[in-house]
Image (cartoon, rainbow, N blue to C red; front, side):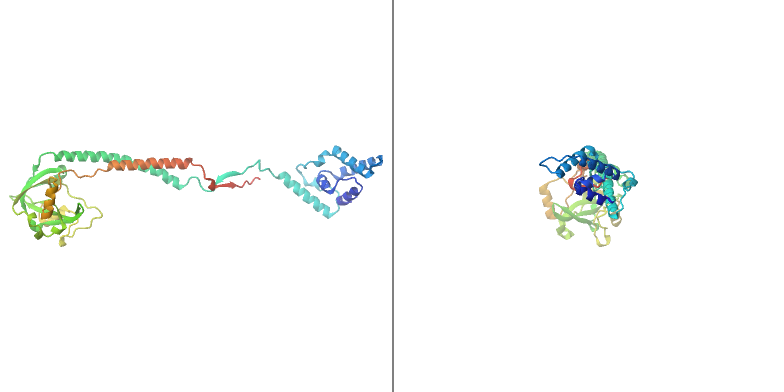
Length: 378
């Protein structure tokens, strides 16, 4: 008979435990062992003596469970891993329903033995994003480049300091008379050198360069050719700044000297035009920057630039501005030297970005960016 029928008959005779215990134990007990146990229990039941006051069936059941726990302790243990499926299907079951039930029990047992515990393979906390990407490479280049620029500014500061010291040394020397003919290529060796020249201003060829601001007021720079005569060359003199309201010569008669004059000033190199300054328009009389070569050709003079100087005096400046007399520059070196600020800026940027990169590398991943990675070995 099949396993289900045998379990039913033995259960009625009181020789088997309930169905739930039978299901747990039948995965371990083979049909051969089951037949031998039935014979043994049947012989024991025949020799059982009935006690007064107690039912024979109750005594038989207790005796059965006592013998079953002693003789078959392994029936209550989880079955080990089955290596071959031929052993499991060797039961003499003729019922297809029982065979299907055995197959399901074998599959569940196989899955249970093949599975692993989560404790053996715990989950791992990982970051879902990349820890280091291209941004870290850019951040690493910033301190290197800024440190190099800081070192370059140190060299620029040394060069600019020495250049200013050289020009200031020329300023304290006594003025030199301007030679009859000036070599334009030698002017760089006498830059910021004090010179003086005597001649007559040619106001007919006067040129206004601007606009230029001085103390918040708009105006122009007056450039007038100085004709020295006696086979001497004509040079360009930057007489100084005038207000826009004195732009016309008729509005400043006192600013147009008519006789022989002696001009003392600084011999300067030609100016360099920057990319933001528009081109001059000589035909319209508009000069946005002093192009010495161009202005020399228009006035018929040498490309020599002399900047007239004046001793700083507030009252004198106010009087000259009211009368339209050009206000000359102060005899000093006006070169800007901001390289010390640039050094502090570049080295500070290098230090700050280095600290930021170190903090980024050492920073632990944020809890919001962590996820549990699925373990495929579970």
